[in-house]
Length: 155
Image (cartoon, rainbow, N blue to C red; front, side, top):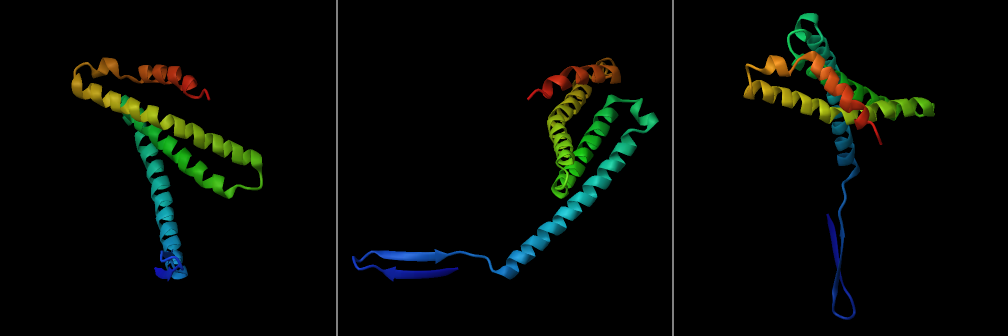
């Protein structure tokens, strides 16, 4: 940090403070951020793919609607990560950018209801453990989701 002080003719003091980061430090920060970003992308994509595969297995989906919630969250997060990544690379075709941006926006809108639905279902499982079979089945989940989904997309 460079500080220079000058005394003006009327006796007041002016100080000029220059704060800056040298070029070497800035390059290190950019490299660190790019490494963190690539780790985030690699772990996020592979983790969401594996999570969706595990939760969408036939014998897992049939047992609880929590599996459907978690699979939907995994697919939604995967769609967001891929569309967010590809949006920054697509510059030549505007229609591809619009489609990717739409997918990203829809996945951002779907995240809170999916998390809320999963949380409510788990709350029901804790509060009413004997009645959870009647309250949280896959058909009811699909009915609620198809009821609220079109209303959520209105801009």
